[in-house]
Amino acid sequence: MTYWKQNHNKDTLILYGNVDIRQVDLGFRVAGRIEKMVFEEGDEVKTGDVIAVLDKAPYEASLAAAKAQLSQAEASYARLRHGNRPQEIAEAQANLSQLQATYDNAVVTLKRQEAELKIQASSKQNYDNALYKKLESEAQLKSAQEALNLSEEGFRREDIEGGKAAMETAKAQLESAQINLQDTTIFSPSDGILLTRVREPGSIVDPQAIVYTLTLHKPVWVRAYVSETNLGRIKPGMKVQITTDANPDKPFEGQIGFISPQAEFTPKTVETPELRTDLVYRLRLTIDDPKGKLRQGMPVTVKIPLSS
Image (cartoon, rainbow, N blue to C red; front, side):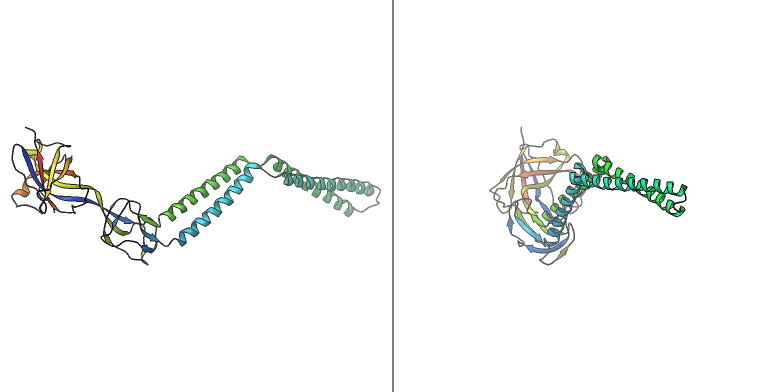
C-alpha cells in the first residue's frame, strides 16, 4: 500500500511513502524434472549462485546427437567441396577402358556376322544378336564416359551449396542443444533474498514456470506522491532524507530519480474519500541502503530540502 501526505514548509517538503523493492520471478526456459532446489525461503544468494537444476540427461543426449549430426554434415560438405578422390577417378577410368574393349569387340563381331550373312554362312538371328550386343555396349560406354567426366569435374555448385547449408543447419542445432543444456540450471541474476520457493525436487515443470521469487538488494526505491501545487518545487536529482518509524533518528540518503509526467488520482487504498479525488504525481526515490535494513512495503517519511 502506498500513500502520501505533504506539508507546505518553505524550506522542507515532507512526503510519506512506501519502500518499493524489485522482485524477479525465476524459472527454467526448458521443460523437465527438477533435480535440485538448492536454497530455502529467506536464504540470501549472490549473483551467479546455482539455485535450481533440472535433470540434465535428456539434454545431454540431445547434445551428443547434435554433435554427431554436425560431424556427418561437415564430412559430406568436405566431400562435395573437394570432389572425388584420385582413387575414385582412377576406378572410373578403368571401368571406361573395360567397356571400351567390350564395345570394340562387339563392333568386330557385328562386322563378321554381317559379312557371313551376305554369303549365307550365318543366320539372321546371329546377326541380330551381334547388333544388339554392339548397341548395348555402346550405351554402357557412353554412360561410363559421362561418369568419368562428372568424377573429374567434381560436384555441381548447387550440390556444394546444399551441403554447406546442411552443415550450417547442423551447427545451429548444436548451438540450440548447448543452450538448452545450459538452461537446465538457474543462476541468481543478482544479490538478494529468496522470498518464495514455489517448487520441490521431482516436480515436472514447463518452460517459464516460476520456481523461486527473488527480492533484489538493489535497487531500493521509495514510491511517493506529490500534489500539483508542490510539483514545481522539486526536480530529478534532488537529495532527500528518508526515515522509518523504527529508526526516525537514522535517516537514509537518497535522491529523486523519477517524476511521472502524468497526473493520477490518489490511490484508492489510502487516505480519506476527500483526498482520493486529488490529482497527484508519482515519484520514485532511489535509496542508499548498504546494510539491507529496508523491506518491501515498509512505510517511510521523505524529507526534501528546498532551496530558498
